[in-house]
Amino acid sequence: MPSENENGPKPCLLVVDDSRLMRVAARKILKSDFDILEAADGEAAWEQLQKNTDIALVMSDLSMPNLDGLGLLKKIREADDETLRRLPVIIVTGAEDDDGSKQSALSAGASDFITKPFDSVQLLARTKAQARQRHTDQALRETEQAKQQLEEHVSIDPLTGLANEYALKERGEENLAYAIRHGSEVALLCLRIDRFKILFLRRGKAAAEELVCQLARLLGEDRRREDTVARIGLAEFALLLPSANPPGVQRIAERLRQRIEAHSFEVDGETLQVTASIGLSCPPVDENTRFSSLLDEARLHLAEAEKSGGNRVAADTARLAPASPPTSEDTPAAASPAQVKRALQALAQGTTPEEDSAALLMAVLPLLEYCDKNNRQRLKQHIEAIRRSLSDRQVEADEAAPPVLPTEVV
Image (cartoon, rainbow, N blue to C red; front, side, top):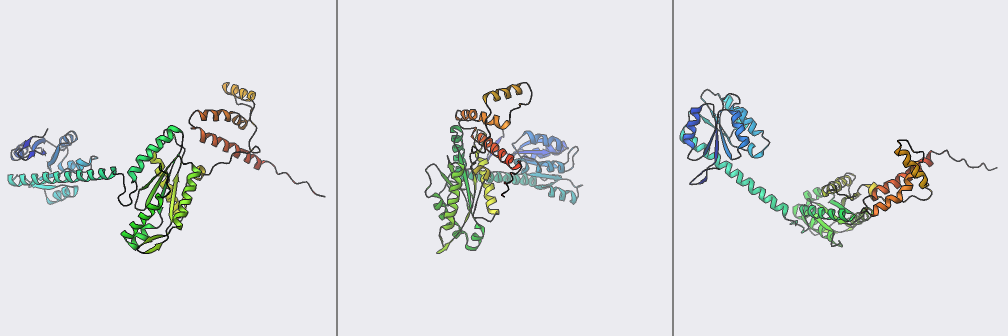
């Protein structure tokens, strides 16, 4: 624990020098204002720095065995720990050290230089100045970190009054947890004003912010109580839609795109027509689904919509386009119970069943659907995939069949 003087806790100073006499001399001069630790070379000093996080300042000789002052300085400036990287390091040089050595230390990040033999007044002034600078820097960083944490935990966007990204993520995790528990769905829509940067540069910050506020009001109209509208970027918004299925959210997104395109925005006394690009995410959810994945997917599709020219909706089309249920003509005949039994016996004996695999799948689909009802519909997407596969197989078989030639008319 750091000792104290009349001004409060003493900062901890690590003196690194292979000369015991020089370490003793430094201790005598500085002990009233610092807690002094000592090391005989750079390696010993580095070990102490790893163990003692209270060290606020290092004063190191330039020429030492094992690891010299430059080597120690390099290790400190390349450390993984940011606090250690920022540590003030005063390099002590002797009369025999040339200007090139000093320049090398300066380039490596030395905070200051002191020349041996020590001048007690100069040594004390230099070390106390570096310690004060260290304290000031730490206080500023802590203040900035506290400010960032406060901003992150404020849930309202100050410009629009909508939820911010932090609030969106909190509510997204809650909605996702509910969807997982109850076997329902959740959708996320990310939207950005097309060519907003150009408008910002041409009309200025005030006009751009007025447009953002008007769009925020438009997005909030006719929303359900359980929906969340958030501003998550300069001109980027998100709509969190619990219990929204893929076809439904696609319709919502398209209507919203059309509404924005048709809306007249009043900015600086002028009427502006703007468009927006939209990206969607509405994946199957299970206990491994994370809201961050939904947000990443929606933003990825948003970027696709913008890259394609803007004013469009982009999404996982395979997921959003509902598969048509197979017709009786497409669907292969289901295997009989006896055929299923024989197939199971063959598998148990390690042989290949003679029965057609599509027919076997058709026979077990009712069993899968029964299990799905008792398992919160977690098998729903798998059952749909099986049905699509059976339908695709039938189409492929039809295409591969030889064409039926029309009867020649006499």
